Length: 620
Ligand code: FES
Image 1 (spheres, protein in one colour):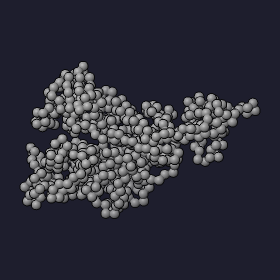
Image 2 (cartoon, rainbow, N blue to C red):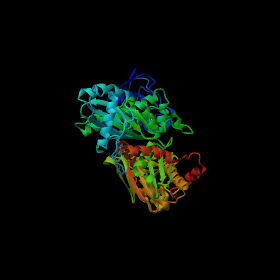
Image 3 (cartoon, rainbow, N blue to C red):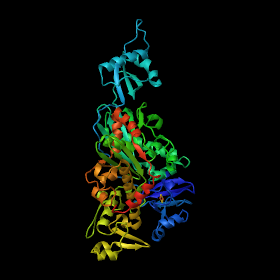
């Protein structure tokens, strides 16, 4: 075994030789950016190490500059341990707290929880009345429901566990019993008056972030919210990398355990935040939205088929599973309800957005877009709803770009170019890169000031100078065959590093924007509508919430809708999960909607390719 020490924390991993530094970091619990999941293509896992590792690989020679290699920079996923070593993880490779959007638009619903608790009296048996315990309970229940219409209606079944509790419960406190009813079934019978609270938790399981909302099921009140970076990001930033990791030996179990662990941490954090008298054991119901891959990984079901044509998921329908089967630290009889998926690449998170925005019931045409690694979108009205997903690539999440990063501290989120450059970074920290909304702003400004043309080509300094943009021209340089625009000078950047946007970064954004725009065009075509018919555009998710609509329009990410109201709806997917937790009808609606929505598979359509090539242009 060899010892690998990670600085600046001084934590030690004991690993066998042949282990990569990235795997050693996982052993040590050190989180290193690994956007490509360790495939050596993103160059984000940079660490500094001088001995005890193998020589640089071809991928490292490609991903690191000669200067970086000369001072000991290596890619943690490529460098393999051959002896004791000391590894410095520079700030830019450390996973930082990500800005997480928790609030979202939510429609008014009638409180109608599917987990309920009731206290009632079951009369004692006599020699004259020898009805069995279960029959006496059923009679008492019928009377109770008649007297209190807010009760749970008829119960469908008594679980074996509850049946075993029944004889003792009905005799221990003069017939007073408390029933816990989950989704119609009586799952627990305890003697005495109900003393516990009935809580539920709604999870939005994102590829990058996980949010949990703790709700009081009896009042609908939100007691606390907590969020975390999805710990699966250690194994790759995007779903494709996670699917690849899940196919390794033990990979699926690892990803499943990681996410269950994160959800348990959120449970603990929300209950602690809600304070006395609540406990994790008061949580009797949970709902989950997430993309199709995340839903699979939570259930521990292989998502492998999602990555291969014809991209068929193993699980499409809503699932109700006992929380203890998933390893949740909540009430032992709690149930978890995962919202249904629409298709392999349009998941339950889109169902959540549909529930929260209510576009299924709109009179005019509405468009809802949730942009992440994929652009998931739905368009229509109460007449007809169509949905599709475009493989936008992770550019809008700041990944796979030389200057890109997540919306975390130090990410540039707003840019203005005029005589010179003005930018704002999250947390007012020294900038480390540009997040998705910042990039859209930047490219919109580069277009407006003529730094790039509508084809996306970056101009040379001479042309810019000629066009009266002398200060901006100074920031253009040539790196090999590629032009580069220096947004932040080294002296202002975090760690003395500049933030530079390359021609390749602009191309990546063009591809992503082209895919989203082409998806919107196909949806309009399918419905036979024009931009003038669209009345509402809901922008969901963190990117949609923070992107400036005028910049999104300027780069042609969305068409100009002359009559539409553009409405950022925040974490609408999470709002949908809350609705499904508090309302049995919303939950049923979710299942009905997935049967109603028409899914368009774009990969097989020739017209998508045509729309895509056209939409790549910035003036499309
Ligand atoms: Fe190492 Fe991407 S290059 S994780």
